[in-house]
Image (cartoon, rainbow over all chains, first blue to last red; front, side, top):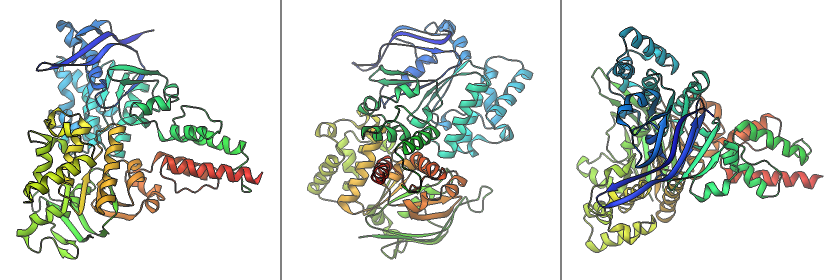
Length: 288
Length: 288
């Protein structure tokens, strides 16, 4: 398998005065190039720390993290690591540095020391990718949350990374903004073949992922295809997480003795399963 | 018993400046004790601006806010008293914690009300107990708590003033599912115990389906709908047009109906969906 990120046997601790709290314990995880991985976990489960380790913002206390074969712990590699992995955070307001959208997007490529014509090309193409080209001369603070977040994403794309790690990018957005940002993320994965690692609390954002990793107390609790992970409704609920409403609906019906598959996520799939069930039970035509 | 009435409220930001913007226009509605009202709308629709008028944090350019029939601005010097009756829990309220201990932080509001030491103590302990804040936590610094705990402490600080009306601006933003469930439950419990009128500004239709009695829908500064949850969610097209949504399980039911299954579309929570489908399926079997 061709892995872009390899986390092997990583332990990470935060030290506050004399208190040492272990956030990650001997954790190993590989992310395949071009894949879409979602990381779930309750607050304090270590998922944001893992994200920062993957993008080289934090270095492991023990174990290694490599990006494209490059060790993040070595300071000399910093630029090469950041060139390959970009990160987008929760609050769009904290990620915008310039007063004009296109200048903000140009910040990254400028720091890579690229020639002006290349920067121009990259900025334009990045803004087009996130559908914000028409706003290139606007002031970022006048944009909506979803638009700002897309500008932040454009700033990362302009560096042409191979992988982007998103840490709850939609948690401060309204439903429309959330949709815009999620559509953009899917597009980056499918059309630009950028590897995506997405940390979220919204279970419905898991739907189109290739893989779901569930974290609990600094360890990986579940890891697999979305449908496999969400088959384990009890285990997920036990650690204070949720499953999508569609998954829960079919799960509860199954508990009542109806034959239904586990781990159904998409609305359309849930509807088809219910239609099939109603047909089987001869219930759903008008005489019912 | 309290009644809050808003009459023809209009508020303009930056009036007579180049940045003049009408945030809310001609909003009229009335709500009474015991109701939980969800305030929904896209970012910039005027939700937060509207609720900040309820206790006089903003003063309208025209129109009135009436508490039990009396204009809250009738005597501007008395506006502070209104703020003890109408409490406000802002977005990310944990950023406003500041005292040395959790106890002192919760006591801050009641102390400002000029209550006796005995009353203050009773209110702090009662509120802490209701919100699951342990005696041990009360002695800790609020900054040593987890995100979800901090949120509850901040909410306790407002609830300890025992306001007749309480407004929450996105109380579950950034919390994991378990933290979210606790906060919503506690808000409901406060309403049940005190009979208060509660407003919750939210982006989560799923949350609103679970706790709200009525929904107040804002769109571009105007009151678009003010009705029961059932009536509002039975209009998915209109909601979608203004950047909102219905819960996922409601979408499933709409799709079933489109496929010719005679189900009731007015299902907004997973539990309702399960009991509805179970009785629907049993009905089918009885007919066999």
